[in-house]
Length: 141
Image (cartoon, rainbow, N blue to C red; front, side, top):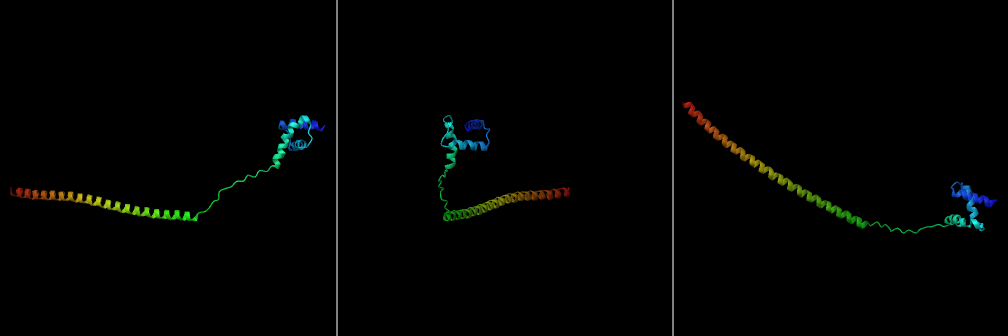
């Protein structure tokens, strides 16, 4: 009777229709020492679950030690600080050169404007001379 029940439970198990209680019954049956000859092939299947449950695998993982190298960090910070000072000084020099160049360009432009205004003043002076000469000639007529 029990053997017939086990065979039916096996059929249900392989059709994925068993409950947890029925699966426990199958596991208990196949973990016994004596199993009928025609069901011996399932003993290793259900026994594997029991072996896996007992087997505990604890892998040993060695992680590299993390060392906090304060000296390296301090050196890197000092180098970074020195580089920032150097780059700021270079920026200041660049700004001074740019200001000097702009000053020279402005002087050049103002000199050119002054020269052109002086030419204009000379031309106006000559026009005034001709205007006086014209007034003198036409008054005498």
